[in-house]
Image 1 (cartoon, rainbow, N blue to C red):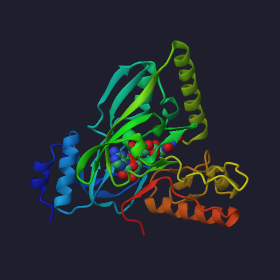
Image 2: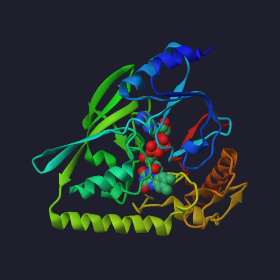
Image 3: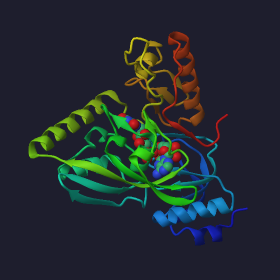
Image 4: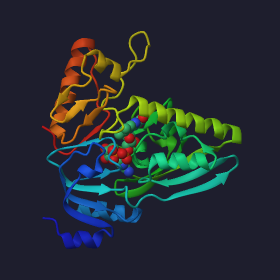
Length: 311
Ligand SMILES: Cc1cc2nc3c(=O)[nH]c(=O)nc-3n(C[C@H](O)[C@H](O)[C@H](O)COP(=O)(O)OP(=O)(O)OC[C@H]3O[C@@H](n4cnc5c(N)ncnc54)[C@H](O)[C@@H]3O)c2cc1C
């Protein structure tokens, strides 16, 4: 049995019980977390984690909730939210580059825009990825030919109850994944390039073009969680394959179950038309997987993370 007083003594940040999570997910879907905490700083994250381990309460971390589907039944255990307080950024200029310390809850698009304005390049391809820096590191988020690990120097994590700094070479990262799944990412240090005035101008134009491309190809006005599935590996001739095109070729664009719909704009996105349930999204995911397998023999792998209990 959780002792709320003890939890409030252990964690200095906000503590809530039976807290609804829908507003913490870009899908605007999800039930309640038994316990929700928003630690004040990195030390507070460690205290929360030690408390949950002591009372044997399972926990998970939530960034900006832009890559998750939270169960209608909610989450048994605790959710540690990093988006409210872990947002410090510190830039140190160094011989034509900058070493940028960033806490895990910082907003990636805001960081990318700010760095470019200051004349540092390397994040502009990732400008439209609407998540936290911690979430981006966990997923090795990427766009337009770049992944976040290309600019990572080191990552600070809680691993086995201790705070550790891992150099980039110590992390196994791949397309939309890393081996940090069992860690809590607290911060990272990025190395960004100092741009000449001309390079900065080109980078700004590129950023604008990529943002425009997103607006034209993604359903940004409806709640969604980005690409539902990863792209499959290239075909036997080495040609890249795109999940959106495979789903579209199955005739599934616009397919609706409850208030969840395979986007008419981009077939690898599912949108929430109003009151979609996680179960509606799951039904569309299962239908899509079955159709793509039947028509193309391709097994689609989820890119989004399912949080909580699913049948
Ligand atoms: C419109 C739209 C467009 C998108 N475009 C792209 C794109 O181009 N490229 C791309 O890669 N992604 C894209 N995404 C997906 C998503 O934005 C990214 O994966 C993002 O990096 C997730 O960050 P987050 O903070 O929202 O993570 P969350 O959704 O909060 O969490 C995702 C996973 O990471 C874990 N996690 C989060 N923070 C931490 C932490 N500090 N420590 C340990 N674990 C943590 C969570 O437990 C969860 O398992 C898009 C999403 C949307 C909605």
